[in-house]
Length: 288
Image (cartoon, rainbow, N blue to C red):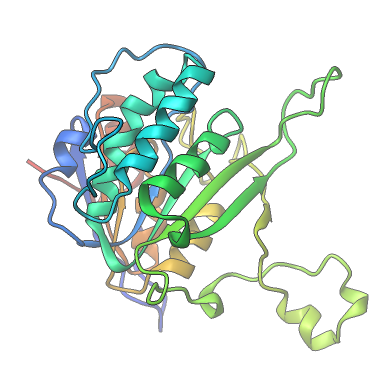
């Protein structure tokens, strides 16, 4: 990590936790993060055989769960989807308690970004609406890229989905002025001044994957590009805010957040990921 440029916010700190993320984050204080970005392992059909751990009521229980969760509605939808796809229960029994903890950790003006692919995004939208309330849904972001093999038997799948939820729909932090702008697709249709400044991104983000050669490349297989995380951190946090990523992987969230003056907390149970993060961010502190 380099020192901040003149006039920029001082570099933030990065704290690393090596361990099971559910156990680690249960020790964090309520409402302690302005931004939480989650990039969990995508459901590829490989069973995880995790025990079900949930704070939600059993199906048929009409009580409201603490924190405002819509228990009965969520339990009904979860049961319907379990019957529809027998792979569903295994994946969501793993992810569900972690999402509940993430919601507890989110500050009143905070934002949660959940990064998935086409296998789970449709399930996630329905279930998160039921779990947190549809009124807390802010955006469905599409990260589109064009790299790698392309099927000739169907439309090639070249995008990920990022679902965005806010803790308080009336008071969340979002600063579009801080977001890096992008070129107009038809610059001749706007004034030269607008063309030079660029336009604000929409909810469809065209961005390359991490190049095979270049300063970002760590060799970690699921590494996400800094440009995607930079846009998220710029929009949904301020210098000095705390940012959490408990599927930290290669540490992109921490590297970007710290460079923008935020304080990042990273969690991963993979020793390889921890080694990559420590090499990438030498100033990061490993929690005891």
